Image (tube, rainbow, N blue to C red; front, top):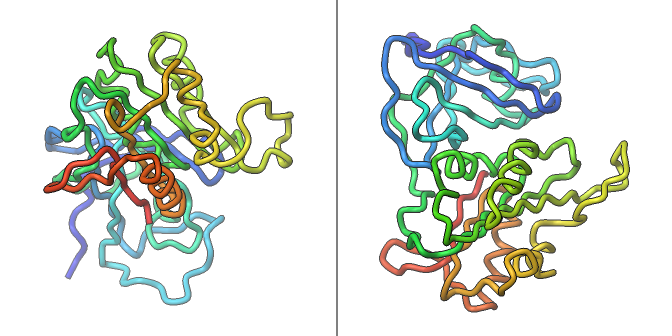
Length: 271
């Protein structure tokens, strides 16, 4: 059976590093549906699509006519409807990302017509402050939220804690730094875990995002201690980070959110 028709096109490709890219994917002949910031869409390419040179060889090549599909959080705002933005890291042994990395502007790709996901702010009271914690491309859903008017609520404090191995892996750093200058109740706190490998001495935070929370960086920036009574915490990215942060937060009185048992900790694991 032939693979579904490729129904979208890469209209922009930005290489942050050789293993980290931003893709703008525009539908061809159909309109993007409405979506809520924090949700994800599905991208796909046939097994016959070429792989990027940096990827590992495949031990067993996939069916050339079968579509390889994976879910990716949307980084673009919910108002812009011309394209969807995705923030993608290369998994060298993966099936799809090596093929996505081989794409150039103008190339075609399959974009699932349905957008879904529950990692949104729907369950967060509008008066609650927000701490958005991410590692790597786990930043994507937060970018969608920030680009969709999140900071227009002047009474709400918002913090983004972003962890990466190196400073060059901190995608959207310029945009987030600009937002921090524009909105006094928003702070952006990036940290790198391998500062010794920096080409230019890193003058920012060092360690993991968990360390930023333990050191009270958010409380220092906000001028008050975030608590379960007034703050919700979102966690996205590395499952180990999510596990560590959840443990720390629970010890401080925060509670994991469940549909039938609401809490202040919301998590989205990336693998």
